Image (tube, one colour):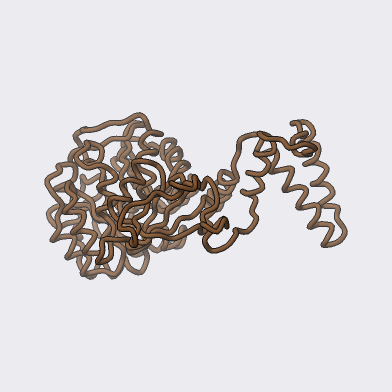
Length: 418
């Protein structure tokens, strides 16, 4: 699996040599997100916070709202970890906080685990000359990633981010041997970073069972995001990987096979493309029927040998005319949202929805809310709840607010500091 990297400093996305010398800077944050987020969860590292030279929390929030983010750099307390998660981050990356006195603290890890849960924590093992370094790579510790340390981490973290500081930003090649030794010592998922510069290295690291975190090689154009993404996957003996297409609500639409070339075509064209085993050629979904699937993002499974493709379908996924190859999909608020939007854009004769102006829809929400709370029996409450949800959906459609945004806000609230 590819983990694209975004390092932050002074409100910009940067790439530094050895964590100090500026090589690349980008201020077009949305463009970088659009480029990298289809390829995998993004690692966002606040370099200023790690060095205690400031922080980039507002930029972190912008990124976390727009894509799946694993955030690290300067997270020193459980309360800060919860705050980062409340901004929308999927996981937090902890480094210095786990080595407060130059040695690993199981008590510190336990506090973070109690605050946010093991499945949300990635331990950063940044090493130089075989020793873990902290404080923005400026302080050496007495620890090395041996079996004792890794056994303690296995009790409290989801995975490990292993960065070879000596190679970071220099593009001189990854430490394949060091990555292999680390993988042999732990059962935790390992993400390797530092010096990765070639497709061959990425294939070797992936074959070992690790994920790859890449920044400099992509930003400088040495490797394209598509090259890195496809090289970080595991294919079967025929060079194929199964791809499960889902809509934005997570409903399964279809499954087919792809090879590296068809995946790269998907990333370039924006239309989901597969490889036909019977015809032995690439094919783009909907190329004859018109029912194309607009590609949004790929996400590999935990072993990187199966892909989930999130798409926006232009029509039925199945040749039978069904919405999905597994049968028609269930009704949802997102579907209601789409139907209401269509009623506004293409109002059929006699459409009640099309007559709802801003004032009337707000009045109906107040009316239906009152009738719901004053309802006397179960059937009546179901009826009034459906009315209320309908009018709320109308209001959201009018305001251009999606249910995805509302659900993201509810998720963030679940991580607010107690």
